[in-house]
Image (cartoon, rainbow, N blue to C red; front, side, top):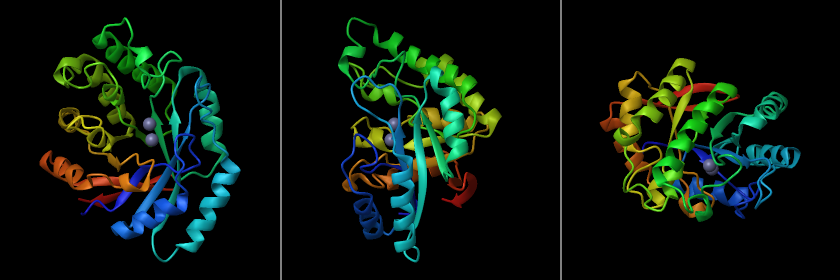
Length: 266
Ligand SMILES: [Zn+2]
Ligand SMILES: [Zn+2]
């Protein structure tokens, strides 16, 4: 395994994980990773779950772990912010206030609804739902700029009635291209999230053809993360991620410290 940094993972500081941060670190050490970046959820106004983040407790705990493991593994403190148009201002103050290493912007909710729940798709055309999701990302990209990577860009296909059976880059090119062009124009990374492989899609998020298109358009800034909420999913299928990236001609992936990018050779 040559991808040795997992830059998307969660612990019990996220509402949907009960894994102690120390357990993620123990797993990372057993896998021989060189570094991990915790990217805990902050999603505001969620109807079902309170996805707030206790920043003081998070920083206290992670700084203690950084000190404890200083000579063994590089531990970074990140954030996965759920982008919604009405939260752009609070996002800016949050990332200005906290000395984060890395910030992922992820589209989870669309118009206040979570595609994770089947009710989002009830009585609606799947294509229209997917298209709406991509349009919402583009809308948010006009409002959000101070982040490092766009998380799991086609995440919604994990949850649609037909999942990714009728989904492809080609079928949604009109929606996907503007997003990719925006990222490239702003020097923002695109994430390869191996959660899609874990969910049995046979593809990461975004799909290989989307990554191919990103490269075709001139994109070369990729971050890699497993989105592990439990230790057994840490660095999930990173061998496949590396194969996909090298097959597509990517030569580096990107990690961050103090919001500054560093290119790591594949
Ligand atoms: Zn996410
Ligand atoms: Zn995540």
